[in-house]
Image 1: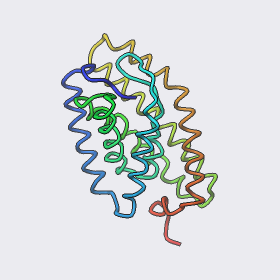
Image 2 (image 1 turned 60 degrees about the vertical axis):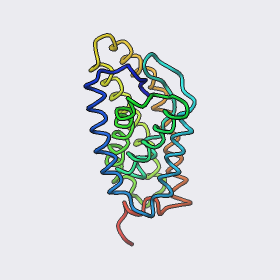
Image 3 (image 1 turned 120 degrees about the vertical axis):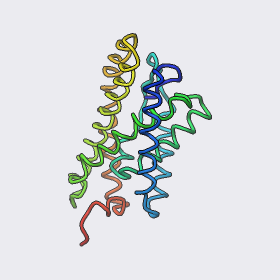
Length: 204
């Protein structure tokens, strides 16, 4: 869901960069040492998942899996997703460097919001309930990202309103797919690596 260079107004680009920098700083402060390896894995997962994309005007449609990063990492999703976006911009030209901040904000902030939305549900000792909440988080993160991308375009000028509407409609299937994928990913994680969610649950 990258926005390309030159598509946004300077005000939106600058505001996005400032807010993204704040999110990255908060994520680094709240990143525990034991979650650094999984942060790298989730960053790589995002990098690979979003390589196959279909351009839609000034944006694109592709898998993101930011909800999965969000429910596991919380604020640490900011630096994880930023690294993935940076590497894509440098090596493949996806998005671009001038819009790196706003792209990070649009993808990472909904991931953090999904974390807090599903935090209580992920505390469940029942793997299926935790997985369902993970799926909700996966879909919700795409909804949030889609809305923020559309809003970024709309704030940059009336000429981008048709593209903003197209982005909203085109990502409906992605919301469903990512919800299902995140549901199964959380279900697997609760069975093979339950310590990923240990910080959400009370001590036994």
